[in-house]
Image 1: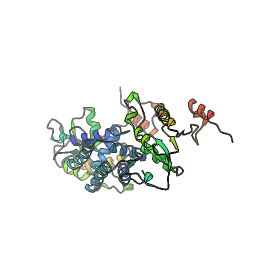
Image 2: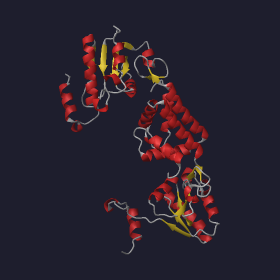
Image 3: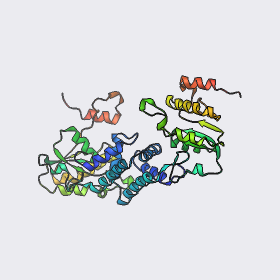
Image 4: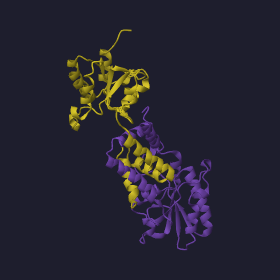
Length: 198
Length: 198
């Protein structure tokens, strides 16, 4: 809106958010203008609370409001198996499955020389330091099946193998419920080479 | 994220925004977590500033930080022509054209009995009170070409005509740059009946 500085500033702030374009940012800004004082306070509190209270679990680097996340704190989980993921949202995806009983390690990124992200910029050192504990039996690499996710998994596997720790990788294949016709060649080739007897 | 209350609360607040689904709200919340303290303060300030400073122009009900909006304050505009729109964003769209020299009146909605919005719930009374000024020559109805926008335009036109004020409506037709093949029948029929000599 020409001339309304505080509105332009707000639209600009919303546009910085991921997957928010100009139209969405405008809609969000007008939504804020239409809030009651109470609703606006609730939004402001939610942002400042989340920003100030949430930090990384001192063990697995997942997000938490406490020193350790609820998964690391849980004695019923199998602490000898660590699933390594890129992002806290990947932990949520795994937990939604209700099948995995081990713990996690969140890298907060992947190695990406193109974007100036080296091994020291993600939480690899923190993972290695966890492995000095003899009780760790297996590390499951669950980075994304992208070039960078792959390279990161390979990099970490190469560090871990000399330590005598079993390192595994999630299976590649045709997604359940999809159509073979639309599978790309790489996925199909991985599905073929990873086939199992029935 | 299971167990992180402040994150769940933030995602919930973002989900209330228009055209923000669960995935977008999650992405936005993680964006907030990744902000520096300074960036987070800038976002919070933008929200609270916009919410507290912006209100309606006392003349045209457009948004402004002052008593009157910059358009109503501008002596170079033609104050004898009022363009009636539903929403402040429609004013922005008109202004982008750089052709309209009159002023505006923002209804902040349309009459919609289905949603419990009657003539008294939108800024029709404020429009009528502006028309007591004899200098008003024309009112251009620029509500959206929807059933409700149409009905609102008709309702207002019926109030204004006895006052001896010229009331006009934006032209309907094929949008410039579109393809006739994809035009719906109603639009095509309006384009035909509204045809002009060349």
